[in-house]
Image 1 (cartoon, rainbow, N blue to C red):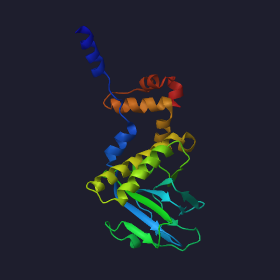
Image 2 (cartoon, rainbow, N blue to C red):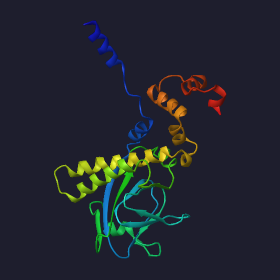
Image 3 (cartoon, one colour):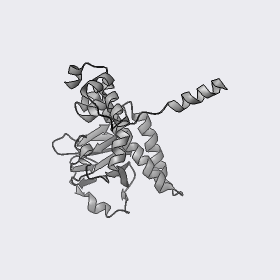
Image 4 (cartoon, helix red, strand yellow):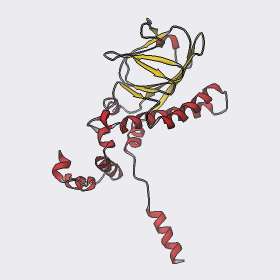
Length: 248
């Protein structure tokens, strides 16, 4: 009986540390509010304006080009995913194509599947909106263009999500809308995870701290106990650093 009681106490005393990224996305009310699918062949190009939102574009089959201001054209291949911030962009079969208005072509929400004469290239997209007014916190930290290549360590999880999303988009099954929405949310998180793990690209700032083992512990501790009167010395102890090094 004593052993069983001790085991129960041990199991009850353990808990998961709060996840700062999950907390922020939940607080901002980040949700994929529109999902689109495009099947195309031949020559095509669609232009979209800058907006206060995130957008992901994933290629399921073939290739497409992503064109953004002040950047070299980027070729996306099957399995690649990109995350777009506040920037206008063009997605096209070839960088030399003259684009048409993508918003007008898709039309209002509900008209979310387009076809350009074939299915040589298949892509899916998602628009991420925020319920909170302080979504600038996330939008200002992310780059205008974030590519998650099929060759990155995150590609395995992303490939699984893309396969499931494609299946749901092709099948008309009960609950398909809910499943597709949750998969789109997962794809968003995996793309941000991939970005946060690329420390050479993240640099300084909140994402840089998340990807740093010592500063990441500090952020998790703060999220675990937000009401505590934290001091520089206390946070430095959590990080396992000297006060001077932590302050710097």
